[in-house]
Each structure stands twice: as structure tokens, then as C-alpha cells.
Image (cartoon, rainbow over all chains, first blue to last red; front, top):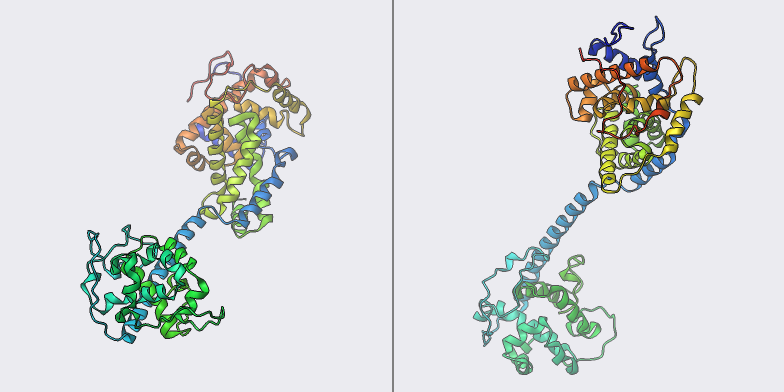
Length: 286
Length: 210
């Protein structure tokens, strides 16, 4: 070594390891021989905790408690995503299932209507869409509600939305009718009738006026019998607008199905269906 | 020790506060000393951040050597801290801290100890960073060479070599100063924490590695 005062006790790594392990275990490195300054230095460096070194204990415990109160940061997002996905799935299933039932109920009740002279709306460029596509309320195709080629081909199932919309339209107070026609949910009716001015006459035709649509009668709020007119009267057309906002540019056909569900319940089933959790069933408009 | 620690980890994961306290008391001293060598005066802050993260991530701890896991977190926090600091104008060495260290060497005398803990740590911190880290992880934190290698991202053999070199350097420094009260703190012109920077060396040639 450089000065030869001491035999090289650190000749190899094994000796160094031994010193380090001794320090780490808190043992004196060498029981025999003169005190080794290096061993002492390591022992001093590894000495037991001094009080000030544990000053952060309360803060650490507080952090521990806080972390226990709010579970690990990694988990909530994953769980939330999963829940959202499951909810969307469930909602989609519910909408599909109830729409089918209600659709069947409505069409069964309805006397076979003659083909309606529906004039096709000017905009027909939309790709065909199938009702089955709408399995989720979130999955909203971004298309404007325009006349569907399928819709104008006639037949009871195409007529049903018009009947329903007419019922809703006629149930409104005359003062509100014109305003209601400006909302997207009535747009199919306007298009089917061929213009805002034609809706009144269109809905008076027997095929569509066959549904119960007497002039508005004041009714007790909250009698809960679920008549279409009562419902509309009670809840007003604000609800229609709210729904318009919610559903926005929803597909005409899909929306019709959703609404058909409501109407089916209101008119035909009354309170018997009881699937109150679906998004569609929360909408009061018939 | 290790079994005790593992048991405490399991309990702390299930919410046992006393077990967490035990973990803190077992690990914090070595952790703080190690972090002090890395970042100097801000070590307390870095240690606090470390315990915050340990608390938060404890549920995701998947087993293994808890001490190494905690130290890895501490090292990452320290490196973040140094990166942040580099963006700011570098702060001068707090002279007061150095004086405190020197004072500790005098006041912390214990039976059989000729050197205070702070002075010993400060001396270790004068080593080249790799050597200092290896020595601290092995002797002060109490990891074996393999585990220390995992923390540092190096092979166990490299850790052994670095620790060996570090010890030889320390032995040489001690020899140079003999048994007189260790003056290391008051002499140093540069902070112990200035990692990666060449410190004034003992004039004598460094012993060659065998």
C-alpha cells in the first residue's frame, strides 16, 4: 500500500463485505485487535435512530391514514371505467328489451292502419340504419333526424311514430302546439305532414286521430293514471324540450322506439311495467 | 429483522397503523441518511415525499424486499429533487448545516465511538457518488449487495466493487487524520452533497484496487 502502515485488510471485496455486513447488523466488526477506525466509522454511520430523524413520524402516519381513507390512486379510475362500461351495457340492454316489448304492445293494440301518405322529406341521404344498432343510449350516431327511407315506405310500424307524435301534439294546448313543432322531437311529424302548417290537418286524419286525443281537459295534477293527455298536461312541453336536448340528434327510429316504450306503458300498461331505471322510461312524454 | 419487517408490511397493508409506525421507525433513519448523502439539506423534505408515496402505494407493493422498495422510492424522489434543483440557480452550501455536522462529531460521543454519526455520514458522502451510495445502502440502509444492485440498477458485483473502493478510500482518509478529533466538516470547502463533482482528495495516491 501507499504507506505500509497497516496490512491491507481491504485486499478483497469479501473483506469489505464483511465490514459492511457487520455495520448493517450493528455488530462490532472486530472483537479482537485494536479498534478499527473504519469499522467505527461504519458503526457510527449505521447507529440507531436519533430522535430528530424521526421527526416526520406524525406526518407519515397522517399520510398513511389519508391513504387508507382514500384507496390507492391506481384503482378508482379502473373501477370507474368498468362501472361506466357496465352501466352503458345495462342501459343498452334495457333500452333494447323494453323497446321491443313496448313496440310489440303498441303494434298489437293498434288497428291495422292504412298506409299513410307520407311525403318523403327532402333530406334522404342518410345511410340506412337498423334499430338494433342502438343498444346503448350513449352510442349515438351523429346524424340529423331526417326522414328515413324505410319510414316513408308505409306500413303500420312506420305509422306508429306519427300516431304517437300526433297524440302528443294534440294533447298540447293550442298555444303551445306551434312552439312544440319547432322542437326536434316533433320534427318527424312535421316532415311527415309536409310542413308545420299541415300538422294540424295531418293529425286530424282518421288514421292518426283514431288514438284518444280529446281536447285538453284540466286535470288534477298527480292523479297518476297515466293517460296520455294527463301526462302531457301535467308535465308540459318543457319535458319535451328537455328530452330533445338529451337525445339531440338521436336516430329517429331509435328514438321512436324509446318513446314507444313510454307510450306503451302509459297507454296500455299503465303502471304495470315498473322498469323505472332505464333512461328511456324516465322520460314522461308520450 | 426481515421476518419482522415482512409481518409489519402485511399488517400495514391491511390498515394497521402501529405496524406502519414500526416500518417508519425501522426504515426512516437509514433512508434519511441515505437521502442526505444524495440531496443534502433538503433530505427531510425528500424523505417526507417518500413516505407520502409509500403510504399511497403500499397497496400496490407486491412483495419482495420492502426495504429495497422503500429505498427505491426514496432514490427516485431524490433524483427528481435534484433535477428540479438543477433548473433553479444552485444554492450555496448552507454553512450552518456544516457547522452543525461538525458540532455533532463532538457532542454525539458514545461509548466506543470516536466519531459522531453525522461526521461519519458526511465523510461517506465525500466519496464518489457510486461508492457513497454503495456503502450507504450496504452498511446504513442494510441491504445486501444483490438488493442494493437492484435499487441502483446495477449488478451485485458492481455494487461490491464500488463499496470496496469506497471503504478503501475511507480507510485512507481516516488514516490520514489519525485519531485526532475528526475535522472533516470544518475543512471541507465543498459540500458533501455535490454529487458527480470532484472533491478535494487526500493528497496521497488512491490505493489501487486489488
